[in-house]
Length: 308
Image (cartoon, rainbow, N blue to C red; front, side, top):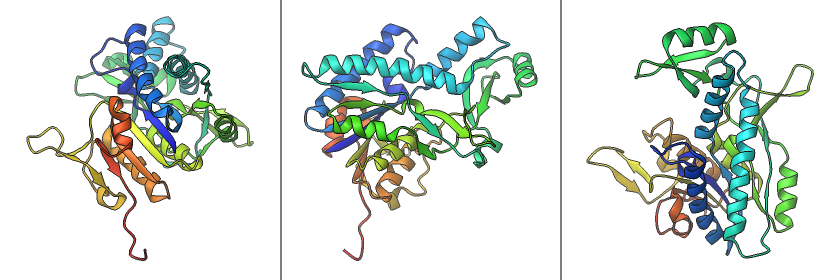
């Protein structure tokens, strides 16, 4: 079975943990153990989030030179290389001797005319005071949003992926028996300029949509979206909360789920299944095998068809 496994950013750096190399490495070793368990029986392709890491690089860049921020496509490439290297090394250590893993930097094309560019919505980078935010908006042309804490953050477009560049290389590596790590953080955002040249974009691509596109383009049998919660819950955070075990794309349409966390995962998983994917699973990183086998987490299966 070919399985695309998407590791959420909070699965690699848990909520409340210090953003240190040691903490990240410890969590990636846990992830590698779960991935190696799947790789013994299945062909796996790994993708991952990068939100905390991009935030860290933005903070470091601002500390070095607040007047010259690094563009988001470059920060995305840096985190894809950093996290991919760590996953590759720890996964190779967890697999039998002689197993082969490869990390690829993946550019993902977006549509320059996508409506997301007119309505930036994804918070990135450090929290600014009101005067700092006003200066950043003036100096760099950034869109800023005020948070409940009273601080402000930059918001950028979050367009859906249009095309994963380098898909042929991913396929060739899979055919050669490699475990491939790619498209981290939704991929490096690029688009065509007016002259047709490919250029980097100040945007963050929805990583769950990229994972679903990757699974669909690779004709994967399953898509696993692994995070730090055990399942998709109805009435999350209330005494009435209840986990969804098995469901279908039609059944999850219209569910009131958090737009910044579980909502995009469910949308991406349902989209993969709706467009011909076998099934999708959402749940805890440490329960990857049991989610794949339908023993835990939330499983999204094809809608029954009346003509079958």
